[in-house]
Length: 319
Length: 279
Image (cartoon, rainbow over all chains, first blue to last red; front, side, top):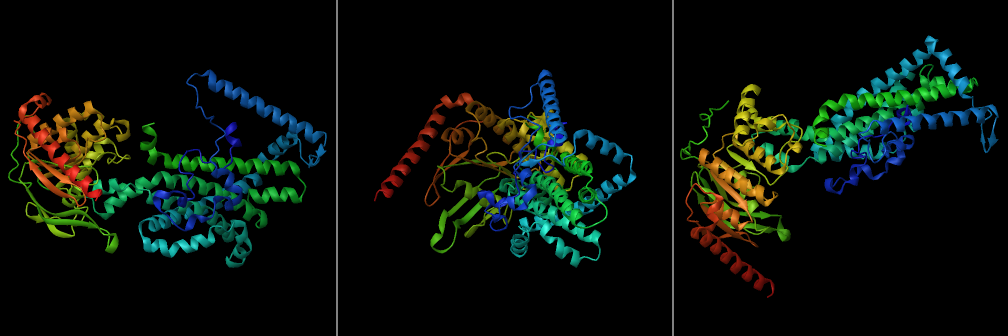
């Protein structure tokens, strides 16, 4: 399927590829966002919002359109796999060395073997649990912090410097200190994963809050809304599209950070599985690990989208 | 929930009950401080009688919206005081319904929920609020559109929802800031007639800001002409058109006379301002 090819953090919605609130002159945001999102390294590809699944012109109503695209996609994939096969069985080596790249058949075989092995699912389960815990913490704290920063200039002034300093530090760079700081390996991995997800969520929430249209605030005030009601019925819903984009990006970055943590420490997790396969020269498992990581990332980002979609019905209805 | 007046029966004019008097008492409005201070509205006093339809007419930037915002409670006067029914205005409130130029409906709420918002804030149960919303949507001819989202409606329909939403609070005063300014000419005419009909049913005081002379003359009991820099009221014209009004009255002599008078005042004022700029 084509969707599996998408980078796990892609932002399908043309929403404010929002991570950088300062980019919006209207909000007058200063500080925080001066560093470009590239500093979030691997996830950067996702920020570009490149959506491989949907061509620009939009889908044709005609069923032949999708069918044709589907056939082309399968054909293209088949060609890719074939090229991969020949490159690896012939141990092609011109600059890039395919000698140690397992052919597709070996990967398939390894997949079958691992699917029959409960330990493979333990790896997946452990990773998913880590991401889940970290993401829930990051979403809760991130949205809360973002709302505070967006509504209170005092909160902004106090919190922004920390974010400014910490955000450009890649999660991987936290690993040595995190291991020293946290009592268990597990908690240090969760911490690193949390950090990865936290910043995009905060920044997008702040961005969302700051773009609340003033006329709507005035309108509900004249209808008798107090501060709490203004927040609940105007500020929060206005920020939701941006928050939801932040959550999706945060989920992508969480996987990235998790993998970094798992590769360096731990005995379980899909990152550990991949790295262990490298150490033990089980090359088909490396590729299987990679594909699994990609799939998990895509699925969890889709889950975030699905979870936030009911709150955004109003956005899609009019189009 | 506060006591609501009896349901509106279409066609039965309702007495304002003496509610909805606006007193603008020595109000001046200044933005900024020190050297950057800018007088948006010069000391102005004005009384609007209950049930009166007043248009504030003036060019962009003359401070007419600012004056309206002071009545709404969004802007605090530098000097003086605004009172509505002898209560000083301190902040926005549901006794003064507000209709904006455009895009002021909550896009994440359905049309019905937008209209039901005021009654909900006043303490009505969701069922009661929904029923009130339906009544008012029916009045503006949009009952069928209650479950739509605002962006699914045309500009004119959205403004009708905006009016229904403001009225659902049973305000004593309706404040309208160029509500039809973004609509096309045909829609605007229909909306003006609708508004007059609603106004007649409710007996509500209306303060209506516009830069369109024809709109002001057609709608108003009183046309207050404002001039820019600093903003002040320079003329108070009362078109002698009978009511109820309809669009074919634009050919009547009193309409033409009032229109002419407005244009003359505006022209004289523009000449004066122009001459001043060239000094």
